[in-house]
Length: 352
Image (cartoon, rainbow, N blue to C red; front, side, top):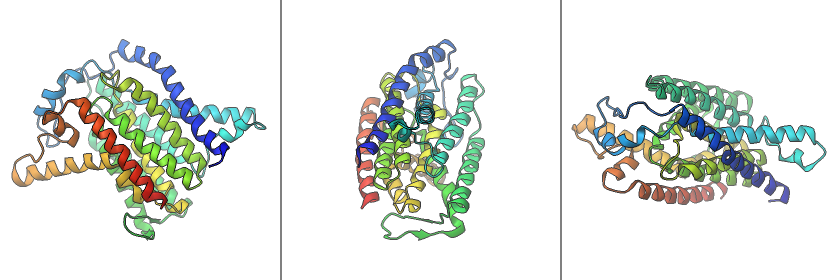
């Protein structure tokens, strides 16, 4: 990696981190002044009943800790991207021109999905904090599927992508028109894993390792702008995590998880067959904490329907460990370790 490419990764990451750190006091003041948290504690289980175990564990933490923490992440990324584009336009004969990373081929779609997901998630968070219960799950799934469908059309019709890499399969698998529903499925699956935002520091740490992994993959696949975008997201997440470690100052919430999971999906596809890479093959490994979260929910629902009993004490999996008696910080730290190891294995799979 050349010195210039190294700077293009390090400087956006550092800039997003510093912007996030600087903006947090203002955001914190606003969130606490206007009490931007759930007005009532309590959560409903997947089958519509009261989540008694969860409520016993978390009722005291749901009220008094604001949502909207994801603003720090996506705000830092968007401001960093805009800042370097503006500097490149003003100083087009300097090195600053090479630090701009907004490009049609690599970062338009990740930035757009991050912004759209953040906006829709912000609406959900607003209604949640005002006592309206947020957007219905069906509505959020429909929006995610619609955004993913438009992205899939872009990949298929504009970029000519119709095949994907699959784990343990040496060559890309042609999907032809089925590429579109496959893309939508991956986006919905990743979004479903966003419920990992349930313990102080947990979601920030696992998303940090995922975007860090794809920054490395993008560098190896000679996609410097995509690498810079992932690095800026990494920096924004670092700033968020600085204030989200126990006791959390705010939660990532829907405005963070929807935008991050949508953009993660796009990044994985951009680093796949489009760049002669294996970004999708590596995704189940790199995003292992999200995958485990989704499957734990599926196992819980199927188990209750078939046997009438819960397989796990509580779903998703990270809350099951809490119910077993693990302190929240221990669950978080072990998830971070698993996430880092999974990210390293995923990068290895992608670059070999």
